[in-house]
Length: 270
Image (tube, rainbow, N blue to C red; front, side, top):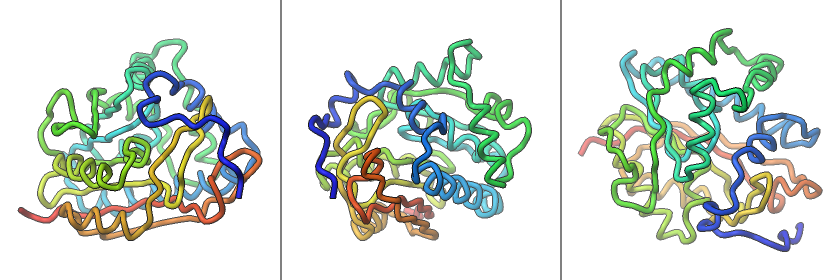
């Protein structure tokens, strides 16, 4: 097992130390020749395609709306959701991340270039529309401020949604399992009854590399995740996971046995 970095920042330190550009460079520029890029990212992308285009597209109406909680500076999820939903709303706690998203949506010249990443998806033989970036520009209706530690979560309420996605967010925002359960409840409250909830994260992970600094995360087990979803009214219908290659030299994972997971479920009627 690799010793933790000398300096680990807390959840509260994201405001002062999280760098959106460094994060995008690390995870979406695809310049790293390590096992994470070779194996984990293709698994994630193939699972997104399967979930959105082969499952949810068959279950949701063409008028459905999606909200992503904790999107960060990334449109990764939108690349697969844009072909399914009529409207997409992105949200994040950090102003820097929201500004990064708005730069891209506003076609600003210094915005992150997603075209190489699109080419990478094609190289992995994952279907993606030629005009997907134009679709994302059209479907994303707003970028909102969110905080999973507050009762309403969103600074600007938009009503309950047909689907809510929370991707690798809760473990970074919460310091205790009790906090995690409470935050999950608040996020799931944003889903309509019989609507869909999508969540991803890392199991057995105690910190992550954000590109510029390392941040602590809450280490969770599959049982804790499933129990929390069940308590908050989600019937899990699908679970996909993958053991992340242990790349000690690049600190991609904390230790052997870290699992990346994506799951989805239906919110029970009240």
